[in-house]
Structures are given as C-alpha cells and as structure tokens.
Image 1 (cartoon, rainbow, N blue to C red):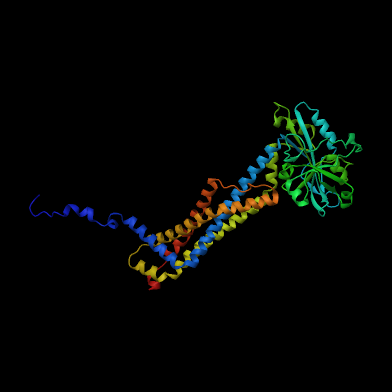
Image 2 (cartoon, helix red, strand yellow):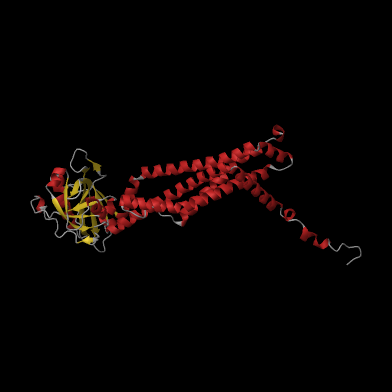
Length: 429
C-alpha cells in the first residue's frame, strides 16, 4: 500500500446507496409508494373503481364461459343422441290458432320414415314431433308442457326408471289411425315431481283440456333424454298418438327426423344424397345442425357481447375518473413537484402504478368471484333447463379476464398522463 493512501477508498462502491446505483429502480419504488398512499387516501373512489373493473372482468369471464359451455353441452347432447343426419322442414313456427301451438313442417312423416328406412345406407330413422299439450294427474291441475311424439325405446333413449314403451307405434295402422292406442307415456324427472307421479301412475294428456280428459295415459318410464334435448319438462308418447290427441292426423306432420347411417356409410355423403332426393327439406349432419342452432342464437350472443362491452366501458370510465380526480385535486402539489425539477415522466409513472394497483385488485377479485358465480349460474340452469354445465371456466378464460383488467389499467393511465404533461407550475403556484 502506498504511503498516504486512504484504506477505506476501496469500499466506496460497496457503501454507495442503492438509489445511486439503480436510479430507475428507486424511482419506480418511490412512484409505487406514492401511488399506494394516494389510493389509500381516496378510499371511496378506489373501492368504486376496483368494483367497476371487477364487474367488467366478471362479465367477460362469465359470458365467455357460457359460450364455451353452451357449445360443449350442445356437442355432448348431439353426440349422446346417437344420430348422424337431421332432416327438418325449416325453422319451427308457432301456430297460435291451431291445437298444439306448433306448425310442424314435415308432412307424411310415417311415409317418409318408410322411404328412408328402405335405403341401404340408412340404419334407423326416427321421426319426432313437438307440440304443446295439457297435462294433469289425479293429484294436480292442468299444466302446459311440451309433448314429444317419438319412440321412447332403443339404445339412444336412456330410461332411468321403468321400462319404456312396451309396443311399437301401432295406432298409425298404415295411415288410417285405427289401430289401438297404447296410452303409454314416458316422462322426465321434473315432470314426475311437478305432477307428483311415478311409474304406474296415470296422466291425462291432450291438445285441449277436453281432449286430455278423454285420454288417460300410464307412466311406463322416466327418461332425461328428451327433456335434456329440449331444455324443458316434457311428456313422450308415440308419434301417431300425439297426432291423435292434438288433431294433426290429417297431414301426418312431424317437426324433424333423425337418421343413423348404416355401418361404414359416410354421414356427409348420405346427407348429400338425401338432400338431392328431398330438396324441400333441410338435411344436415350432426355438426351442421349444431352450427345452425348456434347461428339462430346469434342475436342473443350479440346481446351478451354488448353487455360485456358496456361493462368494459364502465370499468374503464371509472379508472379514468379516479385518476383524473387525483390529478385535479392535487394540481398544486404536482405543479410544485414539477417546479422542483420532478419530470413529467416520473409523475406519469405514479399514475401508471396507481392504475396497475387498481387493475390487479380488480382483476384478481373478478377472477375469484367468477368461480362462485359460475356455480350459481350452473345450479340455476340445472333447475330451469336441466343442464348443469352451462358455464365452464378454462384457464384461458380466466387469464383473459385478468388480462382485460391489466389492459384497462394501462389505457386509463395513458389517457390521464396527458393531463400531467399539461400542468404548468406558474399557473398553480
């Protein structure tokens, strides 16, 4: 060591304050501290803003989760139906002046059934009709339910109690409707609870109360199959018997027909061939039918999207409002800081820190509340339509919801930063 050398000189770097070594980090910490302090001071506006961001995140996650859940549920229901091709006569229309309330557009359903089953590429054909019917039991008053005319038997129909239909549709009798009526009915669990009946009990079913009084049916099974498909309580009888009690035997109408293709046959090719042979009807594969149903609900989905957009605007407006309020109420302090040499970028960084704090709390709260909200909506859907998984929350949806809060925070801070840049110290001091 040379004479006169300072023995402590070598430790200067070690004792240099961290703020001198990392000025940017120090500035960020200071801005964050100021931001948290100011938000704590204005608790009312802070809580309101966090709730606004939470609402926006919650609306976005629940709508996205509902869209995914509806598509998944629809796909599962179509797959569970075990059908390959769907035939309809166009959209189902209401007929207020007619018995049953629905205008079924497929005519000569039994004849078309026989023609299609004669094809080598078709294995099973199932015509179905939907009508509004009056139903009562010996212990209940009349209720209007959806009556389904379909064969409630076979592998595609799940019977949870009872045995289902004991005989095929014999009342049709070659188109004369002179065969005996089986007077058998299959119901779903909600109908059983509504009517307080079980297998072996009686139900009175008809297109009018007068017709219902004359037609006593015996409950032979409980099945969720058709109520899940329709999303409403229902009673299922043979097609010809539903036509009989709703006065639609003349045209032999049905709402739709489902087909199961023969082993090895291509559903798309079969659908194309049938469409060519029957141009008056709409023939679609499973996936095409699901897509068409979703397209019909485009207005509802657009309305839901509009609600989410409004929620996002509300959250963004609240974020901008609280930051503008901060700038307005502290113009003198901000002007003094600028006069002392504090740069606009440092003051803007404080706003960014505030916005990120608001967005983080709002995003986390929105994601956390999405879970109980989804559970509640699923329970409500189970009670109303019989589906229990209408709202699903995959990780991508939750991450997207939190990202929305983050983006809203950045946008609001950028929008307010211009106000700080425009502050002139001489105007406020």
